[in-house]
Length: 438
Length: 57
Image (tube, rainbow over all chains, first blue to last red):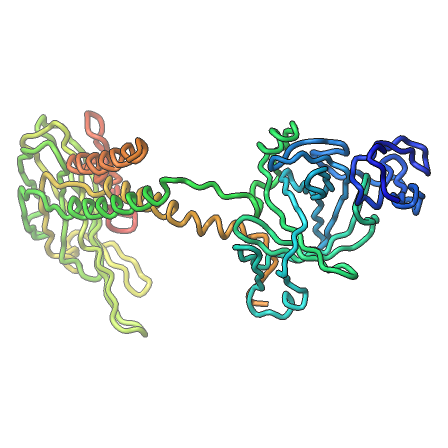
């Protein structure tokens, strides 16, 4: 039977409920939303079987919703709930058959807050289950100007049906779909008994649904969707290139600032026994940059703790601080080894206090650590591990730390912006079930 | 050239100039165990740094 153009409602032949007829002449099946009876639209809506009450799946759409997509008016005529079970996990989504008087049929798919639109296409492109299971490389197919690469195989079961359809869906019915992802869409291949069906699916932004259907979609449960267009940024390459350039310039600046030796004010060598404790006088004339007190010693297979007390031009102690100078050597299965920590430094900024400073130096402790034994020496025994120390003071040294920090920020910015397409590509394909190692 | 690109280059030049200026002042290069300047900032006792595993910057 062909539906007359005037027919807009019927009564369910099972429960008597009034049902709107929304689809066009290719509708073959009508599932009553009230009693779940499958009616044959081509045979006076004869009741074929009853599915009873089924759990209605989550969706932003309902039967009879009308809206415009791609400049075409569509009406939601049918609802199918799908579930896929795999390894204890369950994926559920809802597909709505939609009808346009001018453009025929399509599908609005709702999953985790994302909406996609599918329409049937005529193409020779095909990816078979055999290809998926036996190919060493990800199978692909071309359609139009686009190449689609295998994404996933979906073995789903229909969990819910209501409304009108151009075929006869039944709850519990199993379908297998092979999906291949292109730059702008996804091809879905399914083999029916007598023919192949190929659908092209594209992403529908929430704004288009709001504008076209007046429906506000809930926030997506998962932000990413393989078909969701990636945001593009016109300045991405510019920002990446300029950030990389300035990162390199800042790195060089940091090296120059770090390697600046400053101006040496004093350099002295002290004999441990004869000269310490000692006092060194020097005058800081530059209030910018760092003052650096550097310590070296001839310590061998031991350590020496040196104490520094600095008094500022006002006669006030600026700081009292200690440094360790140590050096160890030995031989093991890998040959000779040394651990040289004989050099140490104290860096500070004098601020506005220029003038004569006084540095008091003394050795507080010394000792050795050998064969698992640690021993602190008496002062008279210090020369067993250290005989001399040298101390130098310089001013106006510069710091490369701020430049290194800025360089790191710029390199990160450069990397993120330049690597963004690769990151988005990886995220887009993250849901694929293809594994090159299988 | 767009306003954003000019702004971004100015930002980069500012970062470069700022790093140079601040680096010349020695900011960021102080020893990490250095007490801040000023009265009362002195640390009494010479053990600071001895047992921290050797050299402190």
